[in-house]
Length: 159
Image 1: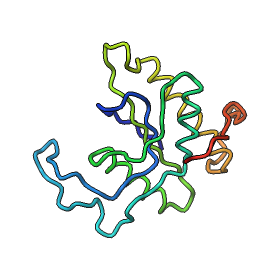
Image 2: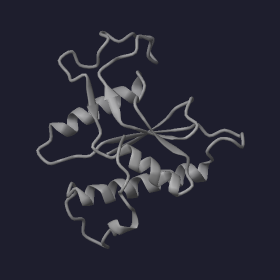
Image 3: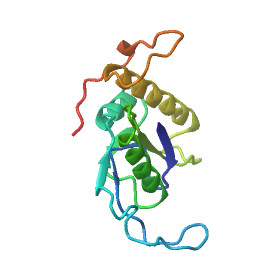
């Protein structure tokens, strides 16, 4: 499962390494505040993705797409979604991979990541996660053409 979210502050693809059990104390789209400062009162403080975020960021950079790994998915909707997704993945009988990628907003400025880079980055992120899952034996075989994991080198280690 790969989630993509737009971050107004992002200038590159931000590969989120963690989701934290915290809820922002600000109103949502309906003007309501979170009931508690945490997402789940009995939940873990943090969940980490099994996808090697630093290696994915390095792969994207090797494809000419600006990217970095990130230590926080924020404190609002993106983090909330990521936290629940990682929690769900850990409760499944079969291994599941979850990743959240923040992308910069499209702007008319020349220093922003353009639409083509956004699409290429999403495509490369998917290819990388599939290759990683294959090397970790975290995907059931899919009928059809074989996915060549040798296309993507998974040598970088997460910091």
